[in-house]
Length: 105
Image (cartoon, rainbow, N blue to C red; front, side, top):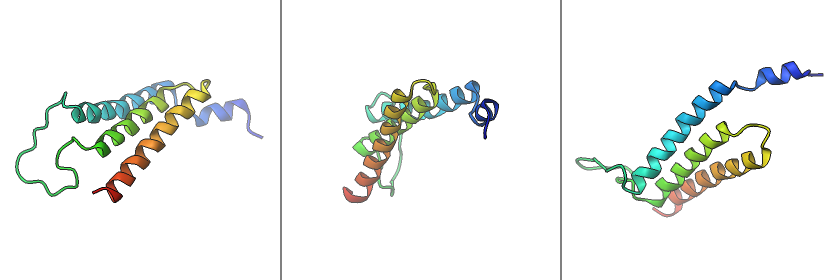
């Protein structure tokens, strides 16, 4: 049987959770701000990618997924409902972006 000490050793420290939350949340915020045009697009030349500019709704859904991932890392484990809501944001953002990428080119 696992004791309380074993259970707490498996969870990341507060510093690691804050660092991961800041990293994922920062990436998500950057993607969302570039979608809304706050961060200007500086692409030059031809682009052969699926999304040549950041103004597609799929880009916004991936940004929401990254921002929700950052929030899921930062939310304390003592708030399970808010953690589930952030997890739904991650899954919903990734599914919407993938479905949009594959079916609505």
